[in-house]
Image (cartoon, rainbow, N blue to C red; front, side):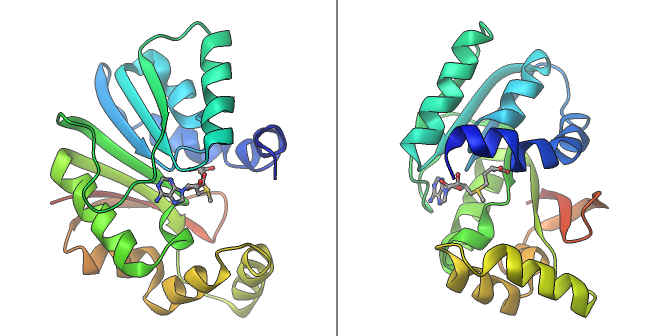
Length: 193
Ligand SMILES: C[S@@+](CC[C@H](N)C(=O)[O-])C[C@H]1O[C@@H](n2cnc3c(N)ncnc32)[C@H](O)[C@@H]1O
Protein backbone atom coordinates (compact mmCIF):
# COMPACT_ATOMS: atom_id res chain seq x y z
CA UNK A 1 0.00 0.00 0.00
CA UNK A 2 1.49 3.38 -0.93
CA UNK A 3 1.66 6.06 1.78
CA UNK A 4 -1.00 8.09 -0.07
CA UNK A 5 -3.43 5.14 -0.26
CA UNK A 6 -2.79 4.43 3.43
CA UNK A 7 -3.59 8.05 4.26
CA UNK A 8 -6.89 7.79 2.37
CA UNK A 9 -7.96 4.38 3.71
CA UNK A 10 -6.68 2.94 7.00
CA UNK A 11 -5.66 6.37 8.36
CA UNK A 12 -9.22 7.63 7.82
CA UNK A 13 -10.73 4.52 9.39
CA UNK A 14 -8.46 4.90 12.43
CA UNK A 15 -9.15 8.64 12.92
CA UNK A 16 -11.62 8.19 15.84
CA UNK A 17 -9.10 5.95 17.64
CA UNK A 18 -6.33 8.49 17.18
CA UNK A 19 -8.65 11.13 18.65
CA UNK A 20 -9.25 8.94 21.73
CA UNK A 21 -5.48 8.83 22.21
CA UNK A 22 -4.92 12.54 21.50
CA UNK A 23 -7.56 13.43 24.12
CA UNK A 24 -5.28 11.80 26.71
CA UNK A 25 -2.16 13.75 25.80
CA UNK A 26 -1.51 16.58 28.28
CA UNK A 27 -0.71 20.00 26.79
CA UNK A 28 2.95 20.78 26.15
CA UNK A 29 3.99 17.12 26.17
CA UNK A 30 7.12 15.56 24.73
CA UNK A 31 5.85 12.54 22.80
CA UNK A 32 7.69 9.72 21.04
CA UNK A 33 5.76 7.50 18.61
CA UNK A 34 7.29 4.26 17.36
CA UNK A 35 6.04 2.87 14.04
CA UNK A 36 4.43 6.23 13.27
CA UNK A 37 3.51 5.31 9.66
CA UNK A 38 2.28 8.40 7.75
CA UNK A 39 2.62 10.54 10.90
CA UNK A 40 -1.12 11.15 11.20
CA UNK A 41 -1.26 10.88 15.00
CA UNK A 42 1.57 13.30 15.80
CA UNK A 43 0.45 15.78 13.12
CA UNK A 44 -3.10 15.80 14.48
CA UNK A 45 -1.78 16.08 18.04
CA UNK A 46 0.64 18.92 17.08
CA UNK A 47 -1.22 21.77 18.86
CA UNK A 48 -0.90 19.87 22.17
CA UNK A 49 2.76 18.98 21.83
CA UNK A 50 5.89 20.78 22.87
CA UNK A 51 7.92 18.22 20.92
CA UNK A 52 7.03 15.16 18.86
CA UNK A 53 9.35 12.48 17.53
CA UNK A 54 8.03 9.87 15.11
CA UNK A 55 10.13 6.89 14.07
CA UNK A 56 9.31 4.34 11.41
CA UNK A 57 11.41 1.75 9.58
CA UNK A 58 9.82 2.58 6.20
CA UNK A 59 11.54 5.55 4.50
CA UNK A 60 8.64 6.13 2.09
CA UNK A 61 6.24 6.61 5.02
CA UNK A 62 8.69 8.97 6.75
CA UNK A 63 9.11 10.96 3.54
CA UNK A 64 5.32 11.25 3.22
CA UNK A 65 5.03 12.31 6.90
CA UNK A 66 7.72 14.96 6.47
CA UNK A 67 6.07 16.38 3.31
CA UNK A 68 2.77 16.72 5.19
CA UNK A 69 4.55 18.27 8.17
CA UNK A 70 6.22 20.87 5.94
CA UNK A 71 2.94 21.68 4.14
CA UNK A 72 1.31 22.23 7.54
CA UNK A 73 4.23 24.48 8.63
CA UNK A 74 4.94 22.39 11.74
CA UNK A 75 8.45 22.76 13.16
CA UNK A 76 8.26 21.03 16.54
CA UNK A 77 7.75 17.49 15.22
CA UNK A 78 10.52 15.37 13.69
CA UNK A 79 9.92 12.24 11.62
CA UNK A 80 12.93 9.99 11.16
CA UNK A 81 13.62 6.66 9.51
CA UNK A 82 14.63 4.31 12.32
CA UNK A 83 14.22 0.56 12.68
CA UNK A 84 13.49 0.50 16.40
CA UNK A 85 14.91 -2.35 18.46
CA UNK A 86 15.30 -3.06 22.15
CA UNK A 87 17.97 -0.47 22.79
CA UNK A 88 17.06 2.39 20.46
CA UNK A 89 15.29 5.36 22.01
CA UNK A 90 15.53 9.13 21.77
CA UNK A 91 18.47 10.37 23.86
CA UNK A 92 16.29 12.18 26.45
CA UNK A 93 13.24 11.29 28.57
CA UNK A 94 9.77 11.74 27.07
CA UNK A 95 6.41 12.42 28.78
CA UNK A 96 4.59 9.86 26.67
CA UNK A 97 5.54 7.01 24.33
CA UNK A 98 2.93 5.75 21.86
CA UNK A 99 2.70 2.74 19.53
CA UNK A 100 -0.34 1.96 17.37
CA UNK A 101 -0.83 -1.30 15.46
CA UNK A 102 2.85 -1.99 15.93
CA UNK A 103 3.54 -5.07 18.03
CA UNK A 104 1.86 -7.67 15.78
CA UNK A 105 4.22 -6.95 12.84
CA UNK A 106 7.39 -8.26 14.54
CA UNK A 107 8.67 -11.24 16.54
CA UNK A 108 7.34 -11.43 20.11
CA UNK A 109 10.73 -10.97 21.77
CA UNK A 110 11.35 -7.79 19.75
CA UNK A 111 7.87 -6.49 20.67
CA UNK A 112 8.46 -7.11 24.38
CA UNK A 113 11.91 -5.50 24.29
CA UNK A 114 10.64 -2.38 22.53
CA UNK A 115 7.70 -2.04 24.92
CA UNK A 116 10.07 -2.32 27.90
CA UNK A 117 12.27 0.34 26.33
CA UNK A 118 9.29 2.66 25.79
CA UNK A 119 8.41 2.37 29.49
CA UNK A 120 12.01 3.10 30.47
CA UNK A 121 12.22 6.36 28.57
CA UNK A 122 8.71 7.58 29.33
CA UNK A 123 6.64 7.60 32.51
CA UNK A 124 3.46 7.04 30.48
CA UNK A 125 2.93 4.66 27.59
CA UNK A 126 -0.16 4.35 25.38
CA UNK A 127 -0.45 1.45 22.96
CA UNK A 128 -3.20 0.40 20.59
CA UNK A 129 -3.50 -2.90 18.76
CA UNK A 130 -5.34 -6.14 18.15
CA UNK A 131 -6.92 -7.80 21.18
CA UNK A 132 -7.76 -11.48 21.30
CA UNK A 133 -10.95 -12.09 19.31
CA UNK A 134 -13.95 -12.85 21.48
CA UNK A 135 -16.10 -14.31 18.67
CA UNK A 136 -15.50 -16.59 15.69
CA UNK A 137 -16.64 -13.80 13.39
CA UNK A 138 -14.05 -11.41 14.81
CA UNK A 139 -11.34 -14.08 14.51
CA UNK A 140 -12.23 -14.66 10.85
CA UNK A 141 -12.22 -10.94 10.06
CA UNK A 142 -8.80 -10.54 11.71
CA UNK A 143 -7.52 -13.51 9.73
CA UNK A 144 -8.76 -11.96 6.48
CA UNK A 145 -7.21 -8.59 7.40
CA UNK A 146 -3.80 -10.09 8.26
CA UNK A 147 -3.44 -13.30 6.23
CA UNK A 148 -2.09 -11.68 3.08
CA UNK A 149 0.32 -9.27 4.76
CA UNK A 150 4.07 -9.94 4.88
CA UNK A 151 3.95 -10.23 8.68
CA UNK A 152 1.25 -12.90 9.00
CA UNK A 153 3.51 -15.35 10.87
CA UNK A 154 4.27 -12.65 13.44
CA UNK A 155 0.55 -11.90 13.78
CA UNK A 156 -0.15 -15.61 14.40
CA UNK A 157 2.52 -15.78 17.11
CA UNK A 158 1.20 -12.54 18.63
CA UNK A 159 -2.31 -14.00 18.85
CA UNK A 160 -0.95 -17.18 20.42
CA UNK A 161 0.98 -15.11 22.97
CA UNK A 162 -2.26 -13.42 24.12
CA UNK A 163 -2.20 -10.44 21.73
CA UNK A 164 -1.62 -6.98 23.23
CA UNK A 165 -2.46 -8.10 26.79
CA UNK A 166 0.08 -10.93 26.48
CA UNK A 167 2.86 -8.58 25.34
CA UNK A 168 2.10 -6.22 28.25
CA UNK A 169 2.27 -9.10 30.72
CA UNK A 170 5.59 -10.29 29.30
CA UNK A 171 7.01 -6.76 29.60
CA UNK A 172 5.78 -6.72 33.24
CA UNK A 173 4.11 -3.31 32.94
CA UNK A 174 1.14 -2.06 34.94
CA UNK A 175 -2.15 -1.39 33.20
CA UNK A 176 -3.36 2.04 34.37
CA UNK A 177 -6.37 2.11 32.07
CA UNK A 178 -7.74 0.50 28.97
CA UNK A 179 -10.54 1.40 26.60
CA UNK A 180 -12.39 0.00 23.62
CA UNK A 181 -12.61 1.56 20.19
CA UNK A 182 -15.18 1.65 17.38
CA UNK A 183 -13.51 -1.51 16.05
CA UNK A 184 -14.09 -4.45 18.38
CA UNK A 185 -10.73 -5.97 17.35
CA UNK A 186 -8.73 -2.94 18.46
CA UNK A 187 -8.07 -1.93 22.05
CA UNK A 188 -5.99 0.78 23.76
CA UNK A 189 -3.97 0.53 26.98
CA UNK A 190 -2.34 3.15 29.13
CA UNK A 191 0.66 1.65 30.96
CA UNK A 192 3.25 2.50 33.54
CA UNK A 193 6.41 0.71 34.63
C1 LIG B 1 0.65 -1.70 10.83
S1 LIG B 1 1.66 -0.30 10.59
C2 LIG B 1 0.97 0.88 11.71
C3 LIG B 1 1.33 2.29 11.35
C4 LIG B 1 0.69 3.37 12.23
N1 LIG B 1 1.15 3.29 13.61
C5 LIG B 1 -0.82 3.29 12.18
O1 LIG B 1 -1.45 3.15 13.24
O2 LIG B 1 -1.38 3.40 11.10
C6 LIG B 1 3.15 -0.79 11.41
C7 LIG B 1 4.28 0.20 11.17
O3 LIG B 1 5.41 -0.19 11.94
C8 LIG B 1 6.56 0.04 11.16
N2 LIG B 1 7.62 -0.82 11.72
C9 LIG B 1 7.67 -2.17 11.76
N3 LIG B 1 8.76 -2.60 12.43
C10 LIG B 1 9.40 -1.49 12.85
C11 LIG B 1 10.57 -1.23 13.61
N4 LIG B 1 11.31 -2.23 14.09
N5 LIG B 1 10.92 0.04 13.85
C12 LIG B 1 10.19 1.07 13.38
N6 LIG B 1 9.07 0.90 12.66
C13 LIG B 1 8.68 -0.35 12.39
C14 LIG B 1 6.15 -0.27 9.73
O4 LIG B 1 6.99 0.33 8.79
C15 LIG B 1 4.73 0.27 9.73
O5 LIG B 1 4.68 1.62 9.31
